[in-house]
Image 1 (spheres, rainbow, N blue to C red):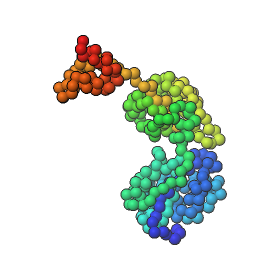
Image 2 (cartoon, rainbow, N blue to C red):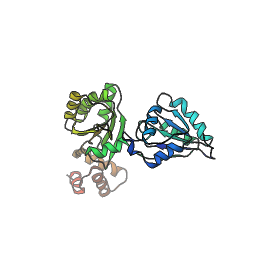
Image 3 (cartoon, helix red, strand yellow):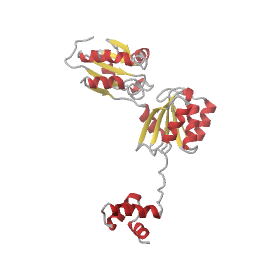
Image 4 (cartoon, helix red, strand yellow):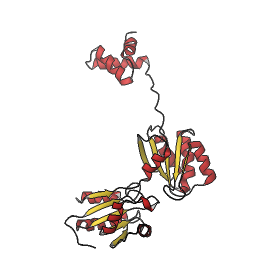
Length: 282
């Protein structure tokens, strides 16, 4: 390792999803100068560095789901000694459904600076390509592996009004789409984004029911990101007259004037004040 500095630093590197040309100049610079590179797959990193014509002159260590609990304290010790560590996963930003969160949290707890050379993200790339609303969205990562747990999670998400972004493994995608169509309805718009930025990139935009049939017939492979339209806003249900009268009476009992009580109840239920007034005085 190179000469240590007074304070170590952890740098998260946004790696290309597939096309090496998406690597930023800063990604290349940090990769070439970090004292230690912690990589999810060291062989994949070596190929990427070769494609980028970048020499990684210092130490490369593996850091993946199977060893991150053991390796994290070792890397924090390296950071505490004043060295710079670059963390890189197989694609996209570390910590986003990839190894990294544990090391970021441990470094911050140890008072070590954490920064990033931001880069590609499968989440935002798929969202932008989907043709679905992007102004509000939520990322759910990977769905549960077992069918029962997956269906339970999807039932809980069925009313979510924001666009959903999900990751899924190829061998589970057919079952996941069938469960999505059942939980969200077969007509909910969706997009399946496969092998983003790679040679065989494919974006299939269809309602969930049709997408489930397409996947069952075609057995899609590669890295898959799903984007699903949010649920339409739930129609407001007007409370019955007795409920409105009781709500006004409760506020009067609490000390509000009838006028103020009617105003509050109208606001709470999204009604016109005149409508509540008429019910209370009928």
